[in-house]
Amino acid sequence: MANSPQAKKRARQIERRTEVNKARRSRIRTFLRKVEEAITGGDQAAAADALKAVQPEVMRGVSKGVLHKNTASRKISRLSARVKAMAA
Image (cartoon, rainbow, N blue to C red):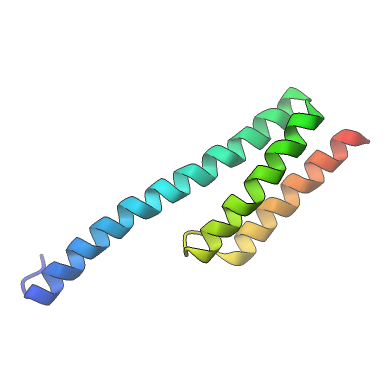
C-alpha cells in the first residue's frame, strides 16, 4: 500500500485514468461489435457504414494511448477485408 503522499496521489491519479480508459475501451469495443454484427447479418451497406464509424474511434483510442497503433491498424484492416469480401 502507498505510504508517502506522492505515492498516495499517484494511486488516486491511476484510479481516475483507469476509469477513463475503461470507458474508452468499452466504447471502441461497442463500435467494433456493430461492424461484426452487420457482417454476420449479411447487410453490406450497414457493415460499410459501421466500418466508417469505427475507424475514427479506433484511431482516437490510439492517440489516447488505449490501443497500440499496429493493433488498431490490424483490426481495421481485417474488418475492411471482411466487408470488402461481402461484395464479392
